[in-house]
Each structure stands twice: as structure tokens, then as C-alpha cells.
Length: 164
Image (cartoon, rainbow, N blue to C red; front, top):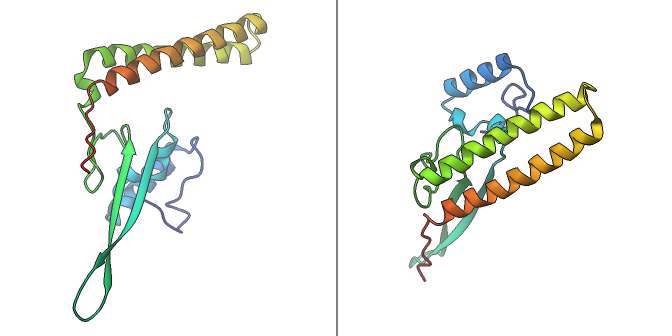
């Protein structure tokens, strides 16, 4: 959700828990879906979404009018959900039902943690910075390879049809 109200807008992924809780409460009171809060866009792995506004011409005998159709979609989970009401549904299987994807995803998550730990060690000045930098780069490359394998596994369970 978006709003001109400063209390609803979030601009930092480091916001406090109190602000997140109060924003979620306010959104709920206003009838807004907290799964669509701006803070969700700052989750670690990012979000890709799109909104397409389409004019649909309607022919009538008296007046040429247009209706508008709005198509909305996002990639991945948003607010912990694969499918949200009013948005395009997930294409293919829910990833958690694909064992190989789950295994690869868990390895990627572990690599994120290892990268964070090595980075923290480097920032604290412990150990050799060159060794830490090399290790971080190696871990990032390994994470990229595993992520690519996980995406390929996921894509192999998706079927997209062109309805022309």
C-alpha cells in the first residue's frame, strides 16, 4: 500500500520493529493489506512486480466508451504468500513442494549467513582482510551458481502457454 501519510510510508530497511508494528496496525485499521506494505519490498532477496493498466474499448450505439482493466503480478513471495487476492496467481508449483528446489534454496540461505559472518569478521578487523575478501567473493560466486540451479529447477515445473 502507499499513502501520502508519513506514518504509512517506509523508506529504510533498517526501520524499527515498533514502526513496522504500528504501520501494520494502521494498515489493518484502514482495511489495507499489510502484505503489500512498502517494507516488504526491502526483504533480503528483493521483489519484482508490475502493474499494467489496459484500456478496453467498448462499442455502444450511443457513445464510444472505454473500460479499464488492471493486471497486477509479482515474483516470489510477498508478505510470506505466493498468491494474494487480486494479483496474478503463481505460475507452476509452489516452490516448497519441489524437493530439489528446497535443498538448493536451503544451501543458498546458508551461504547468505556465511557471507554475513565473514563480512562482519572483516569489518571488525579480525583476520586477514585479503583472505576475507577472497572468501567473500568465492562464497558469492558459489551462491550465484546455486541460485541459478534452483531457478532452473523451479522453471522446469512451470508451464506458460501463449493463448493467441
